[in-house]
Length: 287
Ligand code: C2E
Ligand code: CA
Ligand code: CA
Ligand code: CA
Image 1 (cartoon, helix red, strand yellow):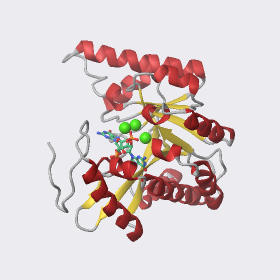
Image 2 (cartoon, helix red, strand yellow):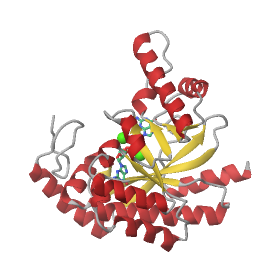
Image 3 (tube, rainbow, N blue to C red):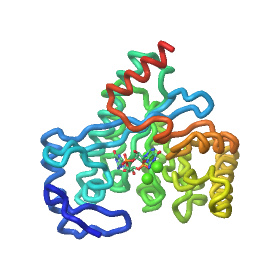
């Protein structure tokens, strides 16, 4: 159920609609946090399943709140979306990620890292300045436009023809689009036709339990069937795939057996600050 957090926040629980008032109060706090520079970006490696080599990265936002400590996105993204502050917050994440990626490429070379993934909400796609913001973030950092992936969920993409125009415009500039949490929505397949996606991210829910042989074989078989269907579909359409939420080695083996080459998850690497990611790239270079 709903609880009051330390600083009087209403904790968000998945599946629960936050009251409008709570969003407005939290919106004021987010506004203050933006002005005070309390948001930062952490980076989760995307890894080659065969070798464990880090070849990519997803940017994830965190809030270093003065009294609550590190606040995860699920506790403030819904309010940021509802109040429209996600536009400014998203612009910060985008700019910071482009700047940091350009620095990594300058230090470790153009092949050290593929395109970083940045999460984008529907509300941002509706903002008339969105394409200009993305192109400015790229230009100001010196990254070329084919050096960025925007990660979108089905619910973000399905809303309206304006969004479709925006996505096609970004595609024409070479910005890559990834379908996040793939397979969890109701119309993942028809979406692939309408939307210039380059990457499919297999949702964690299909990776969970994919390796268990005895406990619930029917559920496991269903997950494997989805994972197999997704990779076949991606192959047929010429899309790349990333399996999300990998938590153990048995899942790595099972996904590799199904043909997955790229993965993300706590077992491979947790989200980390930029300094630790730099150290990871350095150790990989020196290996
Ligand atoms: P997502 O885009 O699906 O990101 C993956 C989430 O799964 C991240 O949670 C990541 O830390 C977590 N994760 C990665 N590997 C594992 C694993 O092995 N096990 C488990 N249990 N979790 C794993 P995080 O950082 O809390 O972000 C949650 C969601 O918040 C993201 O889901 C994304 O939808 C949203 N989000 C995060 N950053 C941003 C942002 O900058 N902008 C927007 N619009 N949304 C964001
Ligand atoms: Ca994502
Ligand atoms: Ca995801
Ligand atoms: Ca998600």
